[in-house]
Image 1 (cartoon, rainbow, N blue to C red):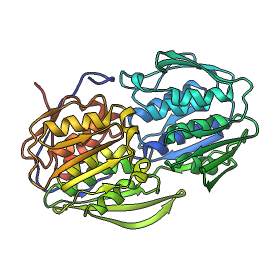
Image 2: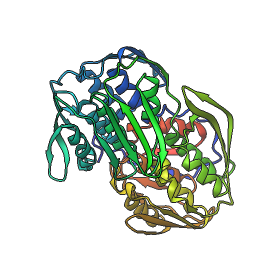
Image 3: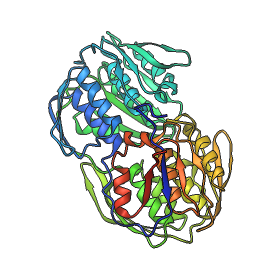
Length: 450
């Protein structure tokens, strides 16, 4: 059941070739950070191409609650009049972050070093997710947290009135945790240092630098050492949000497994900390090309052309690539079902604490549709059946997880029998135009009325 209303069962049917241009929404990570850093700057930040999914809209509401003036000008164009670092007002009501783990963790970070309190909640899925990974490091700054057992929402954060800078080694590869600590460090005196053993998406570092913060990154034997000088005056920016590689994954992967397909996905952000899926697909033999490669707003961008690839081969995915494609493993497992041989995915325990346990959700759904899957705590293997050999025909649980729902919709486009999900409503959190976009390409996704 969706945390945002009535469940919407959906069925994906085998279809003809997918053809055309897929204009996917703006990047979710950059959209969240644009709102938050705009609210912490002094003056007006202008944003174009913002992802207007439920997750980002919840972050926009939160920034308003903290005192920023956030205005929707239509067609993905927004302005944010910020209140400056340390200028947040105490919210009058509970902050509802919906389904967004990124939103709640980053917002907790950015208010943790201001002398105010805020209470956070979310939907049924978000309220099950672990928050100690953020509340532990922000406690080092002097913030306090009071939540349910297991460090779960609803939770009240009491910000540190007299924060101190910290040096923190991130215990797991998590851009959310790294970013929360850096955002907290903005209002702490001196230098806050974050060390990550494995590189994760670096949008926060790039954007902090763009907003005028003094931030450096050094690669050492310990890993990436990121040093932020606190209490800057952030300068407002004009931000053109590139399109989301995590959303692009769905039309790209659908084209690779659907006979006769040729799909162009323009203006996709190819930040090296985000592009692991596309590298992996090429290693599997995918006909996937980068066209018109360029740089926009400090981020590498290209147009992706994906064509039907009948001779995909299973591979062992480089585990050091996991952080750069953690959100794409569900749809990668769908492609793996249509490959010849085994696709082995290791170093992926983060998948078990996303919107759902994504390994469990995808493994059970694939098995129900005739694909053998083995799994462990930190790994899973999809035993591919080759093109045209996946039976399908089952109903899968989406577990309030947008990426699980979309992955099974992609699966059904090339199976022998239709594939159904019990609830497609969560798709709106990140990809609100998924259904019409895929329909325009030629997909057959129906909403079940029974």
